Image 1: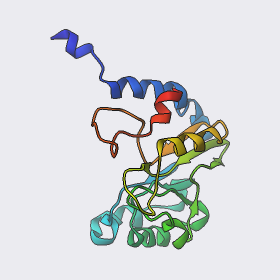
Image 2 (image 1 turned 180 degrees about the vertical axis):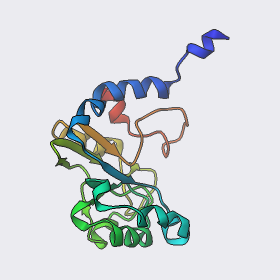
Image 3 (image 1 turned 90 degrees about the horizontal axis):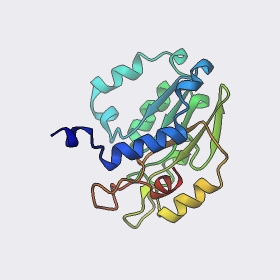
Length: 183
């Protein structure tokens, strides 16, 4: 029984590798950066009033920047834009979003880009592994790898998808394989 208790699954092992590569967040605390992340709301803001209470109580001083990480509906983006000042609002799209969702809502798309706030460099990768046709926030594993290769070194990496872990055995939820290869 002890053998199973101490054995780590591939996801735990991989998270440790990611932390070694991108885990300088605690060392960066002295910068005082506060990031508000919003992801996978899937219309929950537009159709459930209680979810809006959190946003209504936010003060502009509670965060330095806000990054939407995808799968945020157009209606939810309108609500977010009414609360978050545009100069603090950035985003990437998810696998359920139109590739133009951010542009349509006048939100700065930072996919594959490096932004800097309070001396901390942040890189972002949109969507997920391409598993269906259409104009959605998805890339092939190769496209994702090439995008990352062209980015500068950063302190924090943020993505809509997770790192590659072949535990689910389907290309929708396996994650981004280039992260596995690079750690």
